[in-house]
Length: 461
Image 1 (tube, rainbow, N blue to C red):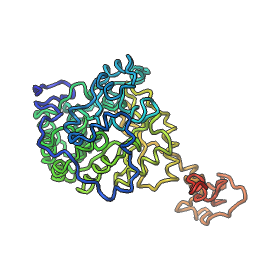
Image 2: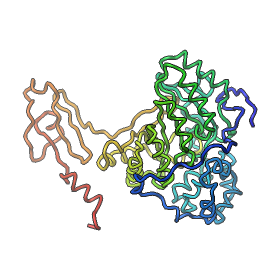
Image 3: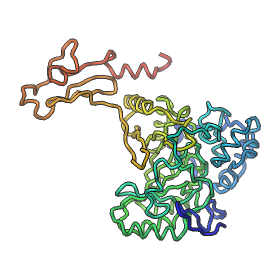
Image 4: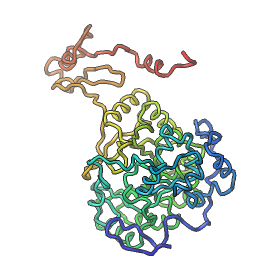
């Protein structure tokens, strides 16, 4: 047990550590749903280490508390699971700077012990985390600057973020809160919950509370319910959201008991954090299905990571897998300017390019919003491809995903005698479109369907 301590900044310590010691909760999320039978799920028969195959057959494998207690926390434990991995000074130094924790379940998804493997990249420390350009910061979003109550971030007028714990099932190597997660695993104190409730009661403009961390679902169900009950007691709070990666890294956490408790505090939403199709497994699909079946909307927030998901094809595969699980793609984040993540960052133009290509391939329900969480506490800004080519008083020139340019008449275009759609000229210019003298400029491949057939051949043709 940890002693309750009041800390000057995030103040996360509580009498009970975030890794529960009780074994009273059911540990297996129900049977596989038939709706998941057609998912392209990661196969466990391709597991890299024989030890995972042995453990997966044991009863404790699906016990979420056993998974938490047996996380890979040291270089020595990492070597035990992956004997062929060269655990040199680089991994030792990086894990000493930024703590390592990997559940056996998530580690079992590693297929290659090098940077070509997305799960390896996201979970195993490397010396690249120790090199930082001068513009990277420990707290680039300046969360602590916007904390009226320790652990409560109030940046936007109508919503706040509550840091409930510093513990995660797996410490992502690109985490925005690398400065604090895992340094000392603990959860919010009772006094801090009381101060949070007092602040919310005095600020009725706050209608949306995001409970984050760390990962709130690493807490015991009882401790998590104390937070939910306290927040829901504030009459002016409309929505509670929980940010969690446990459906990805610890899907066995989504138990019947947990779901039954969460249902008591509707309207409640969950945002999870899939980054790569490899993470979509039978277990993760069952966990998401259990949440959705209980009436909890589930969204997904991905981070654009160099060498992991910074390609249109892999991102499309991920997004299609999510909507098949009834998980709505919500945000695609540009990697934050946080210390230790420079090797994961991509140019902004890469994200814009991916989003533009996805628009021509997927329906809108499967396309997230690409955003940058600006430094200095500037908040989220959507970064979109430019589909408005030109604007005049009478016409706006628009471009679609296939490259077609169209002249769109404004409401009072008729006043200037340009109300009707212009003729189709042989070689019109953008000026012809903006002035209403032409209707459209078609790309070299005029048929969008033809383009799709070229992108996705059928039967090798």
